[in-house]
Length: 433
Image 1 (cartoon, rainbow, N blue to C red):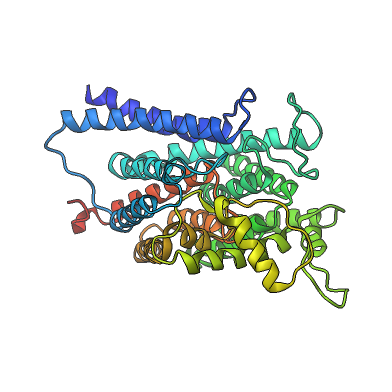
Image 2: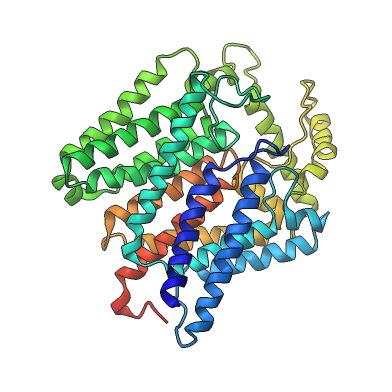
């Protein structure tokens, strides 16, 4: 029975990695958001049931200790308080319209993380990495088909010739790609056979090429920072024994980046289009203009709700009244007609939703993860650098955007696998309680 339950847990975790990124239902009005979050809820419910049955059968077994459990539990507690004092508590529980990232989804992400850290063993990590890479390659294939007009669906949204694959938006798709790219780098460097080396190099080429077709600025910054972090932290020993592989990887990344920058419509052109330095006023344009006033509006909201915040998904209820005040104060005449439901800046999003206490606990969780990975860096350097680079990519791009269902799922998976790696390094030092 225990063996069957273990197989069920493994199958469900693998299903989450495959179904959530790939599944969408065109029969729904919210084609990508509602379909993905519903599939995720059903899979997590099955995961919890299987895990609870396993715990009942194995009553004498203990839970695995991990240093991220306390900060994550504290953030959940603060989130519950913020929901109780939210402008609309029901919206805070379920999440705002279309995004559906509220308290309930946060609880599901954390349950998945908890089960990963208590079930997954180090020997399983390679299987999870393989499934993650295969899945992202499938999304890349569909994205490239979209780029060349080969798509069985006719989409109403005009993304300006930017591909979005199975995620519904170029920003979400590009963030998903850069979170997984360091794992592909890891496989390239670890490859022993020439055939596997060539295979993972092709995967890297596919992902990077597809990434530039999304033309997303936030994720481009995340790509640059996470790549610098990855290659800088490899260390002399890894570079010495894998010099040729690392040089080839660098040539692939730089070569594709240079080639893609020579085209007419690129991520670099989107930067220049929104920053008008030629005029005397030197005003921001496009989405940069919207982001600027979005943050100013969020600051005004925080002034009125500093302690508990306004709850998850409630920003859309207060945005228009507050942005009107900011416009009057700044004497701005350019129109901003779109109602925003997120701040598009990670720390401000947390501050608006959960208040000062939420932000402090959030920063504490980031510090706990950073400390955990730093302490164990020398024990399994390459894998730890790959996992932490994926997490870093998420947080960097999220400073200019926000998370979609696919991204938190991948984030908490990477966090869980990080704990498993660090736990394996310290089994002889009483890491298990």
